[in-house]
Length: 333
Image (cartoon, rainbow, N blue to C red; front, side):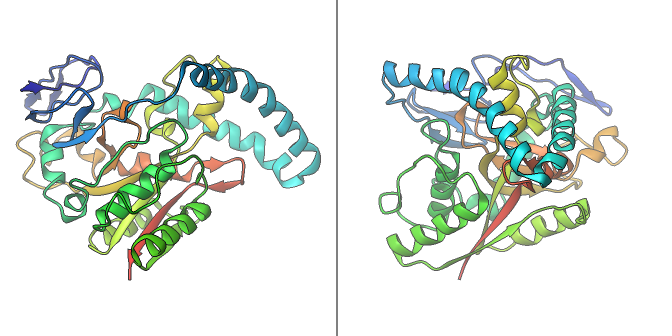
C-alpha cells in the first residue's frame, strides 16, 4: 500500500476564509487515493493507469536526442525561409502568428495552470469522476508510449471508452498530428476492428467564434453519452515554457508543437465544493474547468484547466497549416 503525492512545490493558498493546504512529495504524482499497484502504475484522478515502460535502446535514444537538438533546429529555419519565398500568405501571417504564440506561452509561464489551486484538486477530481462523460473512461485510459504518439494514444483511449477491446484496435504509432488525418484514422480503426460506425466533426474556434460559444459546444457534447471529445491544443499555452526557452528546440517545441489528449469532463461552479469556493471568492472567475487526460504521463494524468485558458490554447495558430488548432467530436452512430 502506498500514497502518491504531487511533487511540484507550491505555497499554501488561502481561498476565501478557508485554506486548502497542499502536501507534496515524490515526482509529479497526484495524491488522489491509496492503492495497491506496481512501480509501472500511477493514479490519475482516482484511476490507476499503467505508465508505459520504454522499449527504446540507448542508440535509439541518442538518435532521438540528435534529431531534436540537431536536425530540427537546423531544418526549421530552412523550411521557414523556403515558405517565405514560395508562400505569400505564410509570409504575411507567420510574423504575427509567432508574436501571438510567444505572448500566449509567456503569459502561461507566469500563470501556469500547474500552479493553480484547481490543477489536480482532490475535491474537483472527485466531482469529475461522478460525471458520465468521465466514467466512460474508467479502465479505458492509457498513456502514449513515446513522444509523438499522443494522437494514436488519444484514439485508443476514445475507442476503448466506447467499449472496444484494446487487443482489437490499432497499436500506438507516430503521426496523426493533424485533426483531419486523426478523424480518418479513428473512423477507419473502429470500422475495421469492430464494425463500429463513428462520425467525426472538427471544431475550430476561429476569430469569429466567441468563448461562450466554445464552452456551450463543449457542454452540449460532453452531456451526450454517445459523443467523445478529443483536443488538439498548444499545451505550452497552459503550462508555459517548461524548459530554458533560449535552447532552440525548447523554443520551437513550445511555440509550434501541438498535442492530442481526450477531454473527459467539465466542472461547473455550484454550492458543493466542500468550502473551497464560494460565491464571493475571488477565484469564481476560474470556472468552468475542463478536465483533460494528458496522454503524456509526465503530467500526472488528469488535470483541470479554466475553460478560457483552453480556449486560447486551442485557438492558437498551427503555423504549418496556418489554421487554428481544434477540438474533435467523435460520435457513435
